[in-house]
Image (cartoon, rainbow, N blue to C red; front, side, top):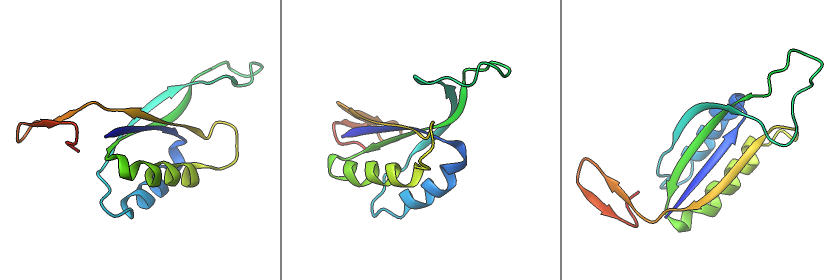
Amino acid sequence: MKEIRAYIQPHKINQLTMALTNIPGFPGMSVSDCSGFGRNRTDQSQDYKPFIAKKRIEIFAPDEMVDVIFETIMKVAQSKHHGDGKVFIINTLEGGRISTGERGPEVV
C-alpha cells in the first residue's frame, strides 16, 4: 500500500475529483486546505506574503493502483504555469479500520 500525497491549485480540485472518481475501484481521498512555498517566491515588490494557498490531497491505495492515480493527478492538475503543485508517493507499512478493528498492510 502507498500514500499518494498531492499539493495542487485550489481551482483544480473539482476537475481532479471527477477524474479520480472515474477510476474503477478508486479507494477515496482526503482533502484539506494548506499553504506554503517552494523554491520560487512571490514578487517581493508587492505586499510580501510567501505562502500560496493549495489543496492537500491524501490517497491511500493498493500498489497496483498507484500509477494510474499518479498519472491522473499529473495530467489533470497541470496548467503549465509556475506553482501547479507537487505529487509524492510514500510507502505505507500498514493501516487500520477503526470501525471493524481490521489492521494490516492492505487495509485501504
